[in-house]
Length: 385
Image 1 (cartoon, rainbow, N blue to C red):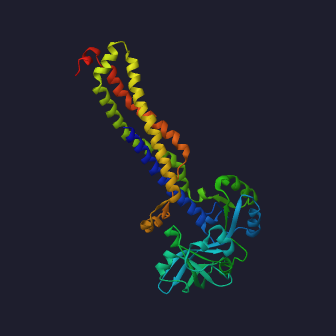
Image 2: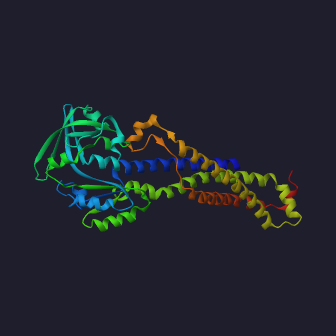
Image 3: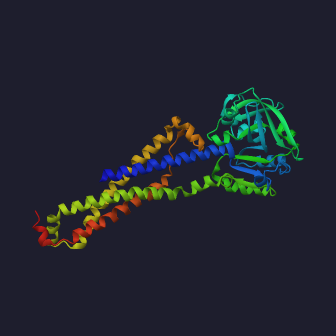
């Protein structure tokens, strides 16, 4: 029974740390490669996606934000819905005009390239395309594509771009709908000289996120300032509800163990009826008999619980360093934005609540066997063979 409790807790901790590590890795990927910690927009831009909803004085605003000590890097972007047309087909996309040097500091776009190379001359009409989109349009570095979009005057404009590189993130949906071009070329097409739709802010440490958000709001009072949790509420929901999932998951495991504890202690009582009857006959009162069974059961939790937690902690430390390679499932994982290698993570502050849950469940399991023991008739129990 001690082994069952230890293995049950170990299995629970291992599965929870795997799930938590998977989602934490996904969140880090989203922050680093897509959202950053904070984004600034015109208040109407995200709802309307109108090309004229730009940030006034975007460059001065960005320079002011960079002065904050918590800020690691910033970048300005022009963003527009567009149609990408090639010889083999077309696709609706989101075209991102970026400052090449700043973008590589915020999203490490250059490190995501799987073919071709990064922007080297921002004066050329070049683009970097997602791998899924490149496969869909049957193009490669050097191929020419036409970007069609609406400019600030409401006119349809188009421009021919040559593919400079192909990138791949952990999110296949993003790869299939996004392209990057030098910001000057997109501004030229959209008649938005000097304007920007978005400023992305990457922090040294996300721990002071809300404080930095308040500081930036005081600097950019006319802009909408959102953190990654507000930009992606579904990820925020996962983070905030994980503790609840943990308690439910461990509750299911402990409920299963509860039946084992009841069975073990009930058998211990039934097999020792003669001994228990003898103790009661020589003067041991029923309260002490009850407490004896409860203490024996508590011993199972006090021994099995710490062993299970120790095994779980060692497993988390090992796989937190070496990870679990799931490359054979990379296609399916990328559909949901998960990495190929999962590194286990779990807050060590959860160990004590799990140990307390184990003790409570074990003690509840002992109530029926203990009640069975104190209900024995000493005279009849002594005669049991």
